[in-house]
Amino acid sequence: MRFIPALLSAAALATTAAPAFAEKFIGYGAIEGWNVYVDTEKGTCMIESKDDFDNVVQMGLTEERDVAYIGVFTKEKTNIQRGSKEDVAILIGPNLYFGEATGMRGNITKGYSGGYVLTDDPQVIEDIAKEYIMTVFPEEEFSFSVNLAGTYKALELAKKCNEEQLN
Image 1 (cartoon, rainbow, N blue to C red):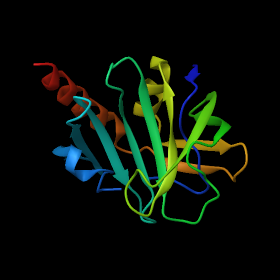
Image 2 (image 1 turned 60 degrees about the horizontal axis):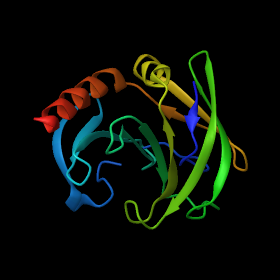
Image 3 (image 1 turned 90 degrees about the horizontal axis):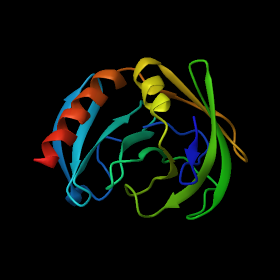
Image 4 (image 1 turned 45 degrees about the vertical axis):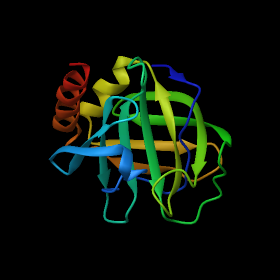
């Protein structure tokens, strides 16, 4: 799989129930611990989950719908700087993916820092839907794991949501 140079980063991150810029997101549904939102600015849908430590995971499509993003955010203290870049490796099931992450601060849910990674590789989405754990290895921070339980059904609901946005 290939990651497109973009955005992800963090220390011990994972998943929030209140998306960034709540006014631009409209609730679409919820399934197996994931919320699905319509991004009214992009005309696409995203899924979001929050873990027991208030970490947030968000996944969706860019406005052009040809690239997917995976975002991970935490309220924990991190050294992540907005716009900072670092290499990242992501293990999903038996597959190891490499890409570039760009840090974010301040323009996401209040009090969170983290970032996104972009991909145009369909295998990544398939792995996320089928596997239960994603382990992220940032270049400068400690590795962390993201719980992917329920992503299959959440991605199916997001697919339906995205199709409705085209009509």
